[in-house]
Length: 118
Image (tube, rainbow, N blue to C red; front, side):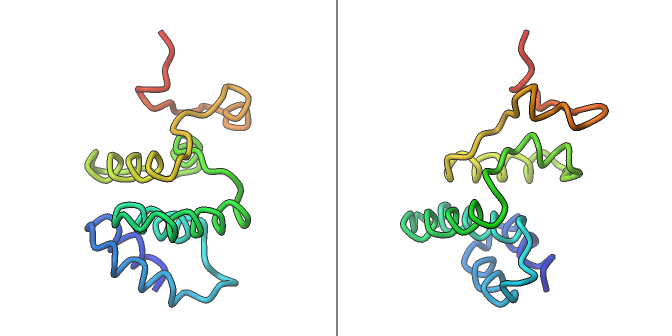
């Protein structure tokens, strides 16, 4: 059931993503599920619920940074999904770009184009 949350989120079926996320037992809910749930609320304009879901995510998994997700293995075959996740991160007030210090734990960190300083 867990991969379904992301499938519904990336298909922009935000109500269904929330419903499925809520069916995942708390003790096995992953940070991705928590994030997609919070972002789904934000995309639906349900800001109070989005902030509560964000607080739950942060309390269980810490602040989220999109560039760290990329370096932890979250990659996309199509930019449309990456763009949707980026917008979800923005709506929730999460950072897109990681700091140099945060990226030190990766042997060959991958940067998002908007995070590369020229």
